[in-house]
Image (spheres, rainbow, N blue to C red):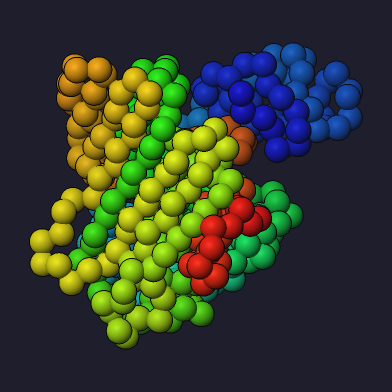
Length: 388
Ligand SMILES: NC(=O)c1ccc[n+]([C@@H]2O[C@H](COP(=O)([O-])OP(=O)(O)OC[C@H]3O[C@@H](n4cnc5c(N)ncnc54)[C@H](OP(=O)(O)O)[C@@H]3O)[C@@H](O)[C@H]2O)c1
């Protein structure tokens, strides 16, 4: 059940009800019941909902004004990925170069363009900022957004270090804005289906979760520098797998990692890694992620084996294979290659509902802890307990 940021719980979890109630918090000090503090009670609901029905209707239906901060490569994928939501979203673009912001706005039917991130933060039309910038700048850009009262959707990893990540969470809390990590894999249809089937016990007790990706990617600019990106492939694309493992199999307790022999000489961080994770429930995770020179790498895949069956899918595909005993079937899924649209819907709902998003700052921090423990293991050559 969602809970209010003030710690107050709601007995009613209906999303429409919650969207209607949130604006009431601001005026609850003037409630006729004379509670005299921020609260929600029947008197407040009945009186204000009646008197302000038209105004609330407007609040519920208003569009969501989101500004993309940083007009780089993934900003494009993001804008394309949320195409289906565009009737509900006013999309703005902020770049250090106003021409680039305008070009993105023209390409993706934006509602506006800014020539600096500061200008976007200062604009009252902007309700939330999606930080799609290099890892070393996430904390500074989150602070900029929070101090301007904007809700924050920050790209993964939340930051390069746990300390930076905690700083972002504290900044958002101080400002009273919603903070969510843009972990789109969490919202992929195949992942949601696996989560449900595992919870129903359809494959028995979890034994082994394997995730494999060999991407033909040659990082440049800030990605090549370990001090700017925070590492290599694992803190970048690999952190999605750390999140999936935690989401599907539970919290890791022990981690062993080894880097593959380097292919990308110009890259300071590791370009390939194998990570073995022991989870608290006994399940084991095996992650193999590398950036390669291979011209035709295999599609990334996930396989989840339990005591009574196996689930497997290719990342971004719209099917899920379910094996139970000797039976095997393929479950078709909604065409949802990226999970970006449901991710943004979840962000918007958590803002409107005033509750903590599923992929909160704390979740992002836990994902980062897996990555950083793997790095420590890789450097020391030993298995290590999860370091927080
Ligand atoms: N969810 C996913 O699957 C996924 C995939 C790829 C990347 N990502 C994440 O998205 C974020 C951005 O990655 P990207 O691949 O889009 O990177 P990118 O192509 O390098 O774009 C980053 C943008 O950040 C802005 N920026 C601000 N200060 C900068 C600086 N000092 N140096 C370089 N750029 C600066 C630039 O935009 P302006 O010049 O317009 O200001 C730049 O275009 C990262 O956190 C990354 O991990 C997520």
